[in-house]
Length: 372
Image (cartoon, rainbow, N blue to C red; front, side, top):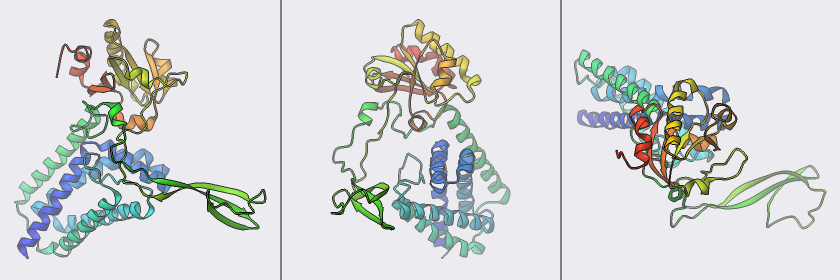
Protein backbone atom coordinates (compact mmCIF):
# COMPACT_ATOMS: atom_id res chain seq x y z
CA UNK A 1 0.00 0.00 0.00
CA UNK A 2 2.85 2.38 0.82
CA UNK A 3 4.42 1.88 -2.61
CA UNK A 4 1.05 2.30 -4.35
CA UNK A 5 0.44 5.52 -2.43
CA UNK A 6 3.88 6.83 -3.40
CA UNK A 7 3.34 6.00 -7.09
CA UNK A 8 -0.05 7.70 -7.16
CA UNK A 9 1.39 10.80 -5.47
CA UNK A 10 4.10 11.05 -8.11
CA UNK A 11 1.65 10.46 -10.98
CA UNK A 12 -0.80 13.09 -9.71
CA UNK A 13 1.95 15.52 -8.76
CA UNK A 14 3.80 15.29 -12.08
CA UNK A 15 0.56 15.62 -14.04
CA UNK A 16 -0.34 18.82 -12.21
CA UNK A 17 3.16 20.24 -12.57
CA UNK A 18 3.21 19.41 -16.28
CA UNK A 19 -0.29 20.79 -16.82
CA UNK A 20 0.52 24.00 -14.98
CA UNK A 21 3.83 24.58 -16.78
CA UNK A 22 2.40 23.87 -20.24
CA UNK A 23 -0.34 26.44 -19.67
CA UNK A 24 2.07 28.84 -17.94
CA UNK A 25 4.03 28.82 -21.21
CA UNK A 26 1.05 30.65 -22.73
CA UNK A 27 -1.22 32.04 -20.00
CA UNK A 28 -3.21 34.11 -22.49
CA UNK A 29 -4.23 30.91 -24.27
CA UNK A 30 -5.94 29.64 -21.12
CA UNK A 31 -7.46 33.09 -20.52
CA UNK A 32 -9.05 33.01 -23.99
CA UNK A 33 -10.37 29.50 -23.33
CA UNK A 34 -11.93 30.74 -20.08
CA UNK A 35 -13.56 33.57 -22.01
CA UNK A 36 -15.08 30.95 -24.30
CA UNK A 37 -16.67 29.15 -21.34
CA UNK A 38 -17.93 32.40 -19.80
CA UNK A 39 -19.36 33.45 -23.16
CA UNK A 40 -21.30 30.19 -23.45
CA UNK A 41 -22.61 30.57 -19.89
CA UNK A 42 -23.49 34.23 -20.36
CA UNK A 43 -21.14 35.28 -17.53
CA UNK A 44 -19.88 38.36 -19.35
CA UNK A 45 -18.95 40.16 -16.14
CA UNK A 46 -16.01 37.77 -15.61
CA UNK A 47 -14.45 38.33 -19.04
CA UNK A 48 -12.09 41.02 -17.76
CA UNK A 49 -10.65 38.74 -15.07
CA UNK A 50 -9.77 35.67 -17.12
CA UNK A 51 -6.06 36.48 -17.33
CA UNK A 52 -5.88 36.80 -13.54
CA UNK A 53 -7.73 33.49 -13.17
CA UNK A 54 -5.32 31.89 -15.65
CA UNK A 55 -2.22 33.12 -13.83
CA UNK A 56 -3.54 31.93 -10.46
CA UNK A 57 -4.66 28.54 -11.75
CA UNK A 58 -1.39 27.77 -13.52
CA UNK A 59 0.63 28.77 -10.46
CA UNK A 60 -1.55 26.73 -8.12
CA UNK A 61 -1.29 23.61 -10.29
CA UNK A 62 2.51 23.69 -10.20
CA UNK A 63 2.72 24.40 -6.47
CA UNK A 64 0.07 21.78 -5.65
CA UNK A 65 1.90 19.20 -7.77
CA UNK A 66 5.14 19.83 -5.88
CA UNK A 67 3.32 19.71 -2.53
CA UNK A 68 1.79 16.30 -3.34
CA UNK A 69 5.13 14.83 -4.37
CA UNK A 70 6.97 16.01 -1.24
CA UNK A 71 3.96 15.30 0.99
CA UNK A 72 3.75 18.84 2.37
CA UNK A 73 0.53 19.87 4.15
CA UNK A 74 -1.40 17.00 2.57
CA UNK A 75 -4.51 17.55 4.65
CA UNK A 76 -4.84 20.99 3.09
CA UNK A 77 -3.73 20.14 -0.45
CA UNK A 78 -5.80 16.94 -0.64
CA UNK A 79 -8.90 19.08 -0.06
CA UNK A 80 -7.80 21.72 -2.57
CA UNK A 81 -6.95 19.14 -5.25
CA UNK A 82 -10.24 17.33 -4.71
CA UNK A 83 -12.23 20.54 -5.13
CA UNK A 84 -10.17 21.48 -8.20
CA UNK A 85 -10.52 18.13 -9.96
CA UNK A 86 -14.28 18.06 -9.27
CA UNK A 87 -14.49 21.49 -10.89
CA UNK A 88 -12.34 20.39 -13.87
CA UNK A 89 -14.42 17.23 -14.33
CA UNK A 90 -17.58 19.32 -14.37
CA UNK A 91 -16.09 21.63 -17.03
CA UNK A 92 -14.92 18.83 -19.32
CA UNK A 93 -18.15 16.88 -18.75
CA UNK A 94 -20.15 19.95 -19.72
CA UNK A 95 -18.02 20.37 -22.83
CA UNK A 96 -18.71 16.76 -23.87
CA UNK A 97 -22.42 16.77 -23.14
CA UNK A 98 -23.21 20.22 -24.53
CA UNK A 99 -20.96 20.03 -27.59
CA UNK A 100 -20.46 23.80 -27.31
CA UNK A 101 -16.75 23.60 -26.40
CA UNK A 102 -14.53 21.58 -28.74
CA UNK A 103 -11.32 21.66 -26.68
CA UNK A 104 -10.81 22.44 -23.01
CA UNK A 105 -7.23 23.71 -23.05
CA UNK A 106 -6.14 21.30 -20.28
CA UNK A 107 -2.62 21.09 -21.71
CA UNK A 108 -2.71 24.33 -23.68
CA UNK A 109 -2.15 24.53 -27.42
CA UNK A 110 1.00 22.42 -27.27
CA UNK A 111 -0.94 19.22 -26.54
CA UNK A 112 -4.49 19.78 -27.81
CA UNK A 113 -7.00 17.34 -26.37
CA UNK A 114 -10.57 16.89 -27.47
CA UNK A 115 -13.28 17.45 -24.89
CA UNK A 116 -13.78 13.66 -24.69
CA UNK A 117 -10.09 13.02 -24.05
CA UNK A 118 -9.99 15.76 -21.41
CA UNK A 119 -13.05 14.31 -19.67
CA UNK A 120 -11.53 10.82 -19.53
CA UNK A 121 -8.26 12.26 -18.17
CA UNK A 122 -10.14 14.13 -15.45
CA UNK A 123 -12.16 11.05 -14.49
CA UNK A 124 -8.94 9.08 -14.00
CA UNK A 125 -7.41 11.93 -12.00
CA UNK A 126 -10.59 12.17 -9.93
CA UNK A 127 -10.26 8.53 -8.90
CA UNK A 128 -6.57 8.96 -8.02
CA UNK A 129 -7.16 12.14 -6.03
CA UNK A 130 -10.07 10.59 -4.13
CA UNK A 131 -7.67 7.81 -3.15
CA UNK A 132 -5.11 10.37 -1.96
CA UNK A 133 -7.82 12.23 -0.09
CA UNK A 134 -8.90 9.10 1.76
CA UNK A 135 -5.29 8.23 2.58
CA UNK A 136 -4.19 11.78 3.41
CA UNK A 137 -3.53 11.05 7.08
CA UNK A 138 -1.06 8.29 6.16
CA UNK A 139 1.06 10.47 3.86
CA UNK A 140 4.26 11.49 5.58
CA UNK A 141 6.47 14.41 4.42
CA UNK A 142 9.43 13.37 2.29
CA UNK A 143 11.48 16.45 3.21
CA UNK A 144 12.07 18.56 6.26
CA UNK A 145 9.46 21.27 6.66
CA UNK A 146 11.85 24.15 5.90
CA UNK A 147 13.30 22.38 2.85
CA UNK A 148 9.83 21.60 1.49
CA UNK A 149 8.71 25.19 2.06
CA UNK A 150 11.76 26.51 0.19
CA UNK A 151 11.01 24.17 -2.72
CA UNK A 152 7.40 25.36 -2.87
CA UNK A 153 8.46 29.01 -2.74
CA UNK A 154 10.94 28.34 -5.58
CA UNK A 155 8.15 26.66 -7.61
CA UNK A 156 5.83 29.58 -6.92
CA UNK A 157 8.40 32.20 -7.91
CA UNK A 158 9.55 30.24 -10.97
CA UNK A 159 6.01 29.85 -12.33
CA UNK A 160 5.21 33.52 -11.75
CA UNK A 161 8.42 34.56 -13.50
CA UNK A 162 7.74 32.23 -16.45
CA UNK A 163 4.29 33.72 -16.97
CA UNK A 164 5.57 37.28 -16.67
CA UNK A 165 8.24 36.52 -19.24
CA UNK A 166 5.73 34.94 -21.64
CA UNK A 167 3.29 37.83 -21.38
CA UNK A 168 6.06 40.27 -22.25
CA UNK A 169 8.20 38.35 -24.73
CA UNK A 170 5.87 35.66 -26.20
CA UNK A 171 5.80 31.97 -25.15
CA UNK A 172 9.11 30.14 -24.74
CA UNK A 173 7.70 27.34 -26.88
CA UNK A 174 5.39 28.59 -29.61
CA UNK A 175 2.82 25.89 -30.35
CA UNK A 176 0.53 28.08 -32.44
CA UNK A 177 0.19 27.84 -36.25
CA UNK A 178 1.72 31.33 -36.58
CA UNK A 179 5.08 30.27 -35.13
CA UNK A 180 8.48 31.07 -36.62
CA UNK A 181 9.25 28.98 -39.71
CA UNK A 182 5.63 28.31 -40.68
CA UNK A 183 4.16 29.28 -44.03
CA UNK A 184 0.74 30.84 -43.47
CA UNK A 185 -0.59 29.70 -46.86
CA UNK A 186 0.46 26.12 -46.12
CA UNK A 187 -1.18 26.34 -42.70
CA UNK A 188 -4.43 27.36 -44.38
CA UNK A 189 -4.55 24.14 -46.42
CA UNK A 190 -6.96 21.43 -45.27
CA UNK A 191 -4.97 18.28 -44.38
CA UNK A 192 -5.11 15.34 -46.78
CA UNK A 193 -7.81 12.89 -45.79
CA UNK A 194 -9.89 15.48 -43.98
CA UNK A 195 -13.62 14.74 -43.92
CA UNK A 196 -15.75 17.79 -43.03
CA UNK A 197 -18.98 17.63 -41.06
CA UNK A 198 -22.03 17.12 -43.26
CA UNK A 199 -24.61 19.75 -42.35
CA UNK A 200 -28.30 20.04 -43.04
CA UNK A 201 -30.59 23.02 -42.51
CA UNK A 202 -33.27 22.45 -39.92
CA UNK A 203 -36.23 24.86 -40.09
CA UNK A 204 -38.59 25.77 -37.27
CA UNK A 205 -42.05 27.03 -38.23
CA UNK A 206 -45.29 27.62 -36.38
CA UNK A 207 -48.75 26.73 -37.67
CA UNK A 208 -52.06 26.64 -35.82
CA UNK A 209 -50.22 27.15 -32.55
CA UNK A 210 -47.92 24.16 -33.08
CA UNK A 211 -44.12 24.28 -33.49
CA UNK A 212 -42.96 22.21 -36.46
CA UNK A 213 -39.39 21.09 -37.31
CA UNK A 214 -38.24 19.83 -40.71
CA UNK A 215 -35.16 19.96 -42.93
CA UNK A 216 -34.81 21.36 -46.45
CA UNK A 217 -35.60 17.98 -48.02
CA UNK A 218 -38.83 17.40 -46.12
CA UNK A 219 -40.99 20.52 -46.37
CA UNK A 220 -44.70 19.80 -45.69
CA UNK A 221 -46.79 19.19 -48.80
CA UNK A 222 -49.17 21.98 -47.78
CA UNK A 223 -46.41 24.48 -47.04
CA UNK A 224 -47.68 28.02 -47.71
CA UNK A 225 -47.89 31.47 -46.14
CA UNK A 226 -49.85 30.11 -43.18
CA UNK A 227 -46.55 28.73 -41.84
CA UNK A 228 -44.88 31.30 -39.59
CA UNK A 229 -41.08 31.27 -39.73
CA UNK A 230 -39.41 30.93 -36.30
CA UNK A 231 -35.79 29.88 -36.77
CA UNK A 232 -33.22 28.08 -38.91
CA UNK A 233 -30.33 25.98 -37.57
CA UNK A 234 -27.41 24.02 -38.95
CA UNK A 235 -27.56 20.39 -37.83
CA UNK A 236 -24.67 17.93 -38.16
CA UNK A 237 -26.05 15.05 -40.21
CA UNK A 238 -22.73 13.19 -40.37
CA UNK A 239 -19.73 13.86 -38.19
CA UNK A 240 -16.41 14.46 -39.95
CA UNK A 241 -13.03 13.29 -38.70
CA UNK A 242 -12.16 16.63 -37.11
CA UNK A 243 -9.16 17.31 -39.34
CA UNK A 244 -9.13 21.05 -40.04
CA UNK A 245 -6.69 23.54 -41.43
CA UNK A 246 -4.51 24.93 -38.59
CA UNK A 247 -5.29 28.45 -39.86
CA UNK A 248 -8.83 28.83 -41.12
CA UNK A 249 -9.55 32.52 -41.40
CA UNK A 250 -6.47 34.72 -41.84
CA UNK A 251 -7.06 37.72 -44.08
CA UNK A 252 -6.14 41.41 -44.10
CA UNK A 253 -7.98 44.32 -45.68
CA UNK A 254 -7.09 47.89 -46.52
CA UNK A 255 -8.88 50.76 -44.81
CA UNK A 256 -11.28 50.85 -47.76
CA UNK A 257 -12.18 47.18 -47.22
CA UNK A 258 -10.24 45.70 -50.15
CA UNK A 259 -8.80 42.24 -49.43
CA UNK A 260 -5.02 42.57 -49.74
CA UNK A 261 -4.03 39.15 -48.37
CA UNK A 262 -2.89 37.74 -51.71
CA UNK A 263 -0.93 40.88 -52.60
CA UNK A 264 0.83 40.88 -49.23
CA UNK A 265 1.86 37.23 -49.58
CA UNK A 266 3.36 37.95 -52.99
CA UNK A 267 5.77 40.50 -51.48
CA UNK A 268 9.31 39.12 -51.21
CA UNK A 269 10.37 40.67 -47.89
CA UNK A 270 8.29 42.81 -45.55
CA UNK A 271 7.46 43.50 -41.91
CA UNK A 272 4.11 43.11 -40.18
CA UNK A 273 3.50 44.98 -36.93
CA UNK A 274 0.48 43.21 -35.42
CA UNK A 275 -1.31 45.11 -32.65
CA UNK A 276 -4.86 44.02 -31.88
CA UNK A 277 -5.53 47.34 -30.18
CA UNK A 278 -3.60 50.25 -28.69
CA UNK A 279 -3.73 49.46 -25.00
CA UNK A 280 -0.53 50.68 -23.29
CA UNK A 281 0.36 52.44 -26.55
CA UNK A 282 2.68 54.91 -24.82
CA UNK A 283 4.93 52.04 -23.69
CA UNK A 284 5.71 50.81 -27.21
CA UNK A 285 5.13 53.82 -29.45
CA UNK A 286 8.79 54.93 -29.54
CA UNK A 287 10.05 51.44 -30.45
CA UNK A 288 7.54 51.04 -33.30
CA UNK A 289 8.17 54.52 -34.68
CA UNK A 290 11.89 53.73 -34.72
CA UNK A 291 11.28 50.43 -36.51
CA UNK A 292 9.06 52.15 -39.10
CA UNK A 293 11.68 54.81 -39.80
CA UNK A 294 14.47 52.23 -40.08
CA UNK A 295 12.46 50.02 -42.46
CA UNK A 296 11.37 52.92 -44.63
CA UNK A 297 14.94 54.27 -44.87
CA UNK A 298 16.01 50.88 -46.24
CA UNK A 299 12.95 50.60 -48.53
CA UNK A 300 11.56 47.56 -46.69
CA UNK A 301 7.74 47.41 -46.89
CA UNK A 302 6.19 47.60 -43.42
CA UNK A 303 2.50 47.31 -42.51
CA UNK A 304 0.55 47.86 -39.32
CA UNK A 305 -2.07 45.14 -38.86
CA UNK A 306 -4.80 45.83 -36.31
CA UNK A 307 -8.41 45.27 -35.35
CA UNK A 308 -8.66 48.92 -34.29
CA UNK A 309 -8.05 50.61 -37.64
CA UNK A 310 -9.66 53.89 -36.60
CA UNK A 311 -7.17 54.50 -33.79
CA UNK A 312 -4.30 53.27 -35.97
CA UNK A 313 -5.17 55.77 -38.68
CA UNK A 314 -5.05 58.57 -36.11
CA UNK A 315 -1.70 57.53 -34.62
CA UNK A 316 0.24 56.40 -37.71
CA UNK A 317 0.26 58.45 -40.91
CA UNK A 318 3.46 57.22 -42.59
CA UNK A 319 2.65 53.50 -42.70
CA UNK A 320 0.04 51.44 -44.53
CA UNK A 321 -2.63 50.14 -42.16
CA UNK A 322 -4.35 46.79 -42.66
CA UNK A 323 -7.43 45.53 -40.85
CA UNK A 324 -7.62 42.04 -39.38
CA UNK A 325 -10.15 40.17 -37.25
CA UNK A 326 -9.52 40.53 -33.50
CA UNK A 327 -9.97 36.80 -32.85
CA UNK A 328 -7.36 35.94 -35.48
CA UNK A 329 -4.95 38.42 -33.94
CA UNK A 330 -5.35 36.88 -30.48
CA UNK A 331 -3.86 33.69 -31.88
CA UNK A 332 -1.26 35.24 -34.17
CA UNK A 333 0.07 37.92 -31.80
CA UNK A 334 -0.12 37.15 -28.09
CA UNK A 335 1.85 40.30 -27.21
CA UNK A 336 0.72 43.73 -28.39
CA UNK A 337 2.42 44.41 -30.68
CA UNK A 338 4.16 41.38 -32.15
CA UNK A 339 6.61 41.84 -35.01
CA UNK A 340 6.61 39.41 -37.96
CA UNK A 341 9.52 39.41 -40.40
CA UNK A 342 8.05 37.85 -43.53
CA UNK A 343 9.27 36.32 -46.78
CA UNK A 344 6.11 36.03 -48.85
CA UNK A 345 3.83 33.89 -46.65
CA UNK A 346 6.65 32.43 -44.53
CA UNK A 347 7.32 33.71 -41.02
CA UNK A 348 11.09 34.24 -40.95
CA UNK A 349 11.14 35.68 -37.42
CA UNK A 350 8.57 36.57 -34.80
CA UNK A 351 9.16 38.52 -31.60
CA UNK A 352 7.72 40.93 -29.07
CA UNK A 353 8.19 44.68 -29.34
CA UNK A 354 9.88 44.46 -25.93
CA UNK A 355 12.68 42.25 -27.30
CA UNK A 356 15.13 45.11 -27.76
CA UNK A 357 17.86 43.02 -29.40
CA UNK A 358 15.64 41.70 -32.19
CA UNK A 359 13.93 45.07 -32.59
CA UNK A 360 17.31 46.70 -33.27
CA UNK A 361 18.34 43.98 -35.72
CA UNK A 362 14.94 43.51 -37.42
CA UNK A 363 15.80 45.12 -40.77
CA UNK A 364 19.18 43.36 -40.93
CA UNK A 365 17.57 40.00 -40.18
CA UNK A 366 14.93 40.35 -42.89
CA UNK A 367 17.57 41.34 -45.44
CA UNK A 368 19.66 38.34 -44.52
CA UNK A 369 22.53 40.34 -43.07
CA UNK A 370 22.08 38.99 -39.55
CA UNK A 371 20.80 35.47 -39.02
CA UNK A 372 19.77 34.18 -35.61
